[in-house]
Image (cartoon, rainbow, N blue to C red; front, top):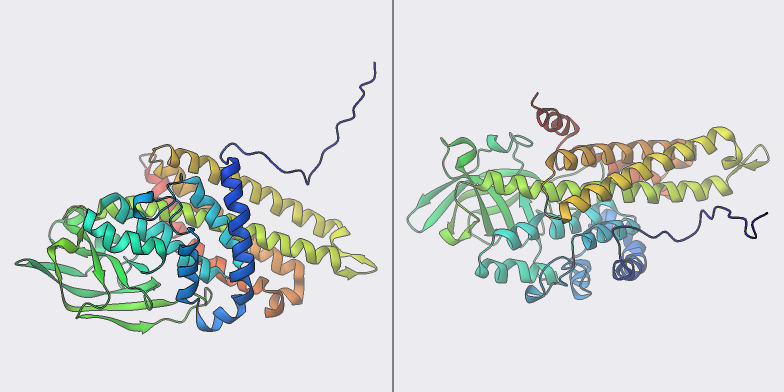
Length: 394
């Protein structure tokens, strides 16, 4: 007997997802609209001026900075999946530098304060960070130490009820504009990993200065700085977490940093794919849209498959992270994989657009330049590979 209904695929149908509830999707809808209405129109302007403080304050006013933090500090009390949605929505800004500046605030600086901070520190930094009143930066990398955190030279020597800090940091996102810095320093130069401590420092503290604003290949909307500390005195209550446990604290922080980097890489790849697909449907050559040529159609098929694999890998690892696991190997793998996919997609999109892909007008060249940082920041590909290899006892 013939069936009454013939089932046909609907590639445009809305998907249901294992992670996201209706509340998550409501946030996605509202935040994406805000990004497209209030951030995207300024993407070109901010490449020249960097994103303004008012944009962060506006995000705080709308509750987008505090999605995963407790209501008692001004947050929304949501789960970790809200952070994923925020990263995905920010990809619609058309500005990798803006996205990175916001991610530093929400997923790199504020989480350690929430986890490790005293009540006074939470009131002083977390609460105004959630509203966008205070902007933070993360001070790990130094001119002579990046991935090798244990090799940092910035020292914090205790002197009575204070620490005297001397040293420098470089490649610091938000470093020019920051009101405070979450920084790593050596409190015991002879103790190796156990001699590192985290500090929360106001940038108006005497002895702190921005020694240089750095110029970059991409991420132009984000300010990046070299910082100097010269006999900078901070009180003992500037210590975040435990003295001598900063290496382990920052190692935990890096997992969240790598997760948001992975989410941003996938979302950025999706936006490039969409823009290039639109172009391939409209651009004609030899009397038909170029997307109708098998060579181009297969490029999209390859990209779509890689993007989907990266996205689902990211979601699976995020599920484990959100459920209290500490899956360092898988976080490292997904950061490595997604950042590479992002770069592969960017390169292919430039190729499909041809000469137009190389022009600023179509903005794919900007995405190409911006996404390249993802294979360096939050741990280089080489470090990621080494972490994964060592996790198997090699």
